[in-house]
Image 1 (cartoon, rainbow, N blue to C red):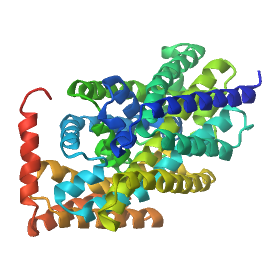
Image 2: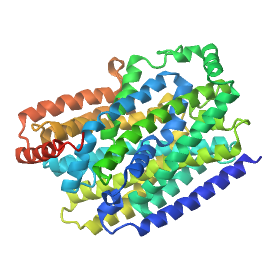
Image 3: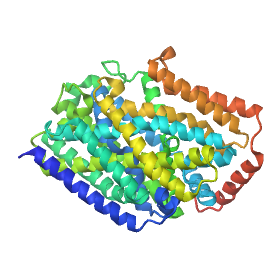
Image 4: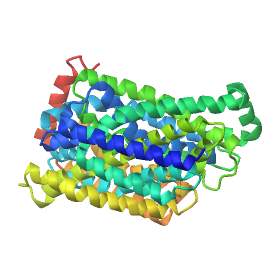
Length: 501
């Protein structure tokens, strides 16, 4: 059977359906900026959970995590479980984001920091961090789609063609109907993604003789990859902390994810979102890691580890129909994440940079036009260029999972300010501003130069610097006492009502 033909066919059907969903969603979209960027805060629990899941996991899991497992062994599982451990922070942060978002009308996470610290410079700085560090994260989604389509089609679809398809779809759908079209697509595709992925894992394990035989073969064939550090030296303690620390705080540091904490329509929907995502994430993590080990057994010796999933899906015993469906599911999740990043960046530029620093009197309609017509296309093109460049590189640093973590390392610099906003009345604008800027400079310099003083990774150094600076500078500068009292007083009142427990 001509796999390349069915790959193109599946892509064409997906694009047609995606356009239909986007157009249908546009009919339900209101005229306001909140409706475009947050679906007017009216998403139910199931859709909230699925859009959070698809945005979070995207190409990273089935391409990036499977590839990382293929290259570095079982330590990849511990790395990804760190993210799920971080999800427990949402027990504290989700209701707080949701409550203040509704009360004060925040559209972007940076806008929350602007108001809480009573400083436009703080929000603008957080927005600039996102503009800088989310470009690589958006680019790796495009790379994942390119690798996937190239591998499944047997090379008939060039990697750059897949990257270009992801770019075009994300650009179109994020502009057509904003968050609503992205969320509706996510709800369907996230289910397809996890169900078909589990089915294919079952087919692979059955082919290898069942789970008992599967693990026996792992132990006898690649036993060195089942220990930490591995026989090849991967997953030293510094490597693990360097990659895992940004992942631990991902749910609040990455604005395209934390922005979704504003969208559930009710407390019930919020609880369903949190519980559903945790179950989804645990199951999907195990599937992705087992996919990576399956590829080790069936297609050893790949030059590029991120091609592990495409190579696995190209095995002749896996039905082509399943392969095409999972290709579409992973592609949709990757494009969803790009959509989400573009929407978040456009909202942050319009609300926190243009309105915050350039023109405080700009109308809401003008903000929306700036986001739709300028920021979304420009950031999409920059991500496209980065994806094209990085896809031609080799080595651990240019694999999807490490690139994703490196992007999140820069966003980690906003975490002390976020914690301070909710839990410390003494946090100041000066502390937030200096800590984010200094930490980001440290991360950028170390990442560009490849420096790891004492063997410690850039994100860890940045986290140390920004945390220390935030507390020291806050102690010697004046906090916005009135706003802090109002902000935390409101949260205390609402959170003691009992319905959030």
